[in-house]
Image (cartoon, rainbow, N blue to C red; front, side):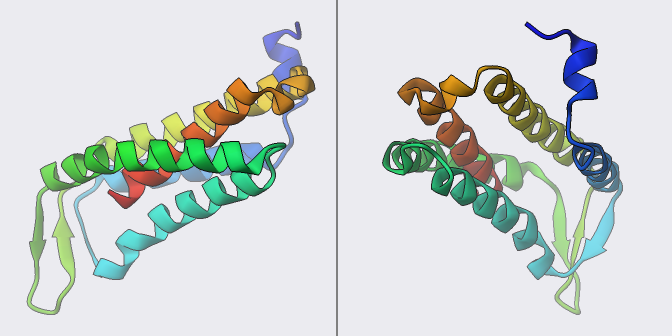
Length: 151
């Protein structure tokens, strides 16, 4: 089993700017702001697109798609409940004034950590990519991400 240092040293360089971007988005989410409503759909669509890309790249796309769909449907109510808790006010020009919160930071870091952990696991033990349990788990993680975001 590789050490923590070996894992970090063999992590592709593009991962670190991605982590910095996730941290920046989370910091931005802590601040109250005024945004157009269409901006709220960008992050959920990115989550859905990455989940579908993971399904398409799976060794068993049917199993991954089924797992993703079940997890997405299960996570939709949770995402909806989280979204309804955030204070928002519609301004006269149609934009939304929303309160800051820790959700974006926590959610973004959770997604990053789960994807990173799966990437490390599949890098260390590539045979797991073909195991039905891990295919379903990977698809389910993508479904949860997309479901909470879309909810």
